[in-house]
Length: 449
RNA sequence: GCGGAGUUGGUGAAGUGGUUAACACACUGGUUUGUGGCACCAGCAUUCAAGGGUUCGAUUCCCUUACUCCGCCCCA
Image 1 (cartoon, rainbow, N blue to C red):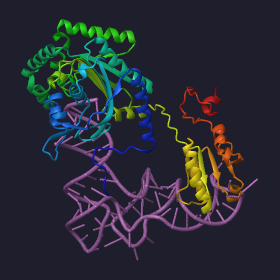
Image 2 (cartoon, protein in one colour):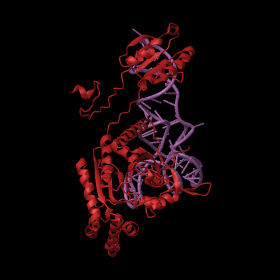
Image 3 (cartoon, rainbow, N blue to C red):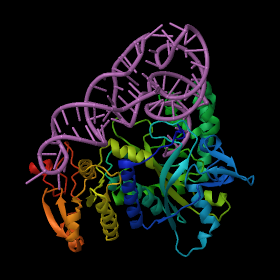
Image 4 (cartoon, protein in one colour):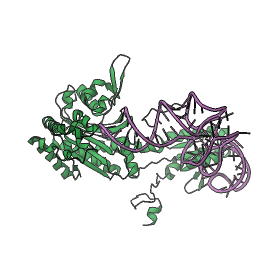
């Protein structure tokens, strides 16, 4: 048997419906915030990610899917979204557009060669957005608030937003130096991971779980002390705007983000759900003012955010957030003999072209099995075609909810369906339901009212 | 890249070094029911992730590989 590659996932059935729903909500919210959809290539020149994401990040050094194409070009499947968008911004000379800043969003698969675990795949989907061309703290606040609002709109409650600032490039560098100087004399006391981090990514030492309680950690220099006045002031402004918008956040100096390109504001969103896996950061972002210049474009400030879509879905599931998944057909057509089957083919096509969701039996099943199938599909109406009645231009149509049957003229069938199809009232209520349901169904939650 | 636990049919699963791999659900057909939803009858894994080894004999023991899950690193 051929199996799916390690770390990939088939999404179908109810799960696919949930994905489509969440994607749709995202599209709607992004439209309100005036972000435009952008689609960039799945593979790009390897150089883009090396220069854009950073030579020192693990994502680029050992987690990319690299290949040489038949023309001998070095290609990489994108491990994240920002670099591609930045490249597109430069290549299409969007800095010349008279409509600044440029706001984009994407919702696409990314590829990272990692060991899979809960909420982590080799093919992962990220939804993200970028605001390019503004260095105003208001832009930072918008990007953060948008993140919070999307989770809120989707119904996710147990999240925590951590924000921090790395300051400008100079502040960041000074801080990095200070950290190295602080930890270097004590290197022998650090765990083996931290020893490596000291060289590669000293900011990450602060995040270490093993060394967290050690004295050197507590005395480590703080970002805030290495910020120049401008950077400090900037961060204060961001916080002010967030407060005005009523966005809750926590300032957490250990939020440093691994990607090389970040500066100033960085933030992440954590799922705080009981029992959620180790991969609990469901979204992260920050400002990357230097990246576009580094990729050969004009110096352009930018900020963005990315959501791990798979993890987001996992969080929604853990929090038992209700997602409407309506999957019912309007009409199921059954038949017994070949003439009726032929007529079913005709009628199915005709009604579909008139906008109805129509199904019929493709397996020449018994009537009994046909009814069962109609039931399974949650069909609102069922018709058993009958040759004799067809000669009189009539069908008997059964309303599967009321169990009542009526004889209807075929010419009037469309009108009949239009009049009698009541839009989906399927109740999603479960036992733990708290009377928040707006459905008109007479289900448990209303009976108690 | 490192560590741990798994992998039996469409699904949930029981099980054993020895000729027909339990049970349930689902599914298919039939009887009956005014055309399904109930009941009853029948069918439904030559096969236990793949390959190799030990053995007279392995789904059961050993090894390898693949995949899944849970952690670490890293990260969304």
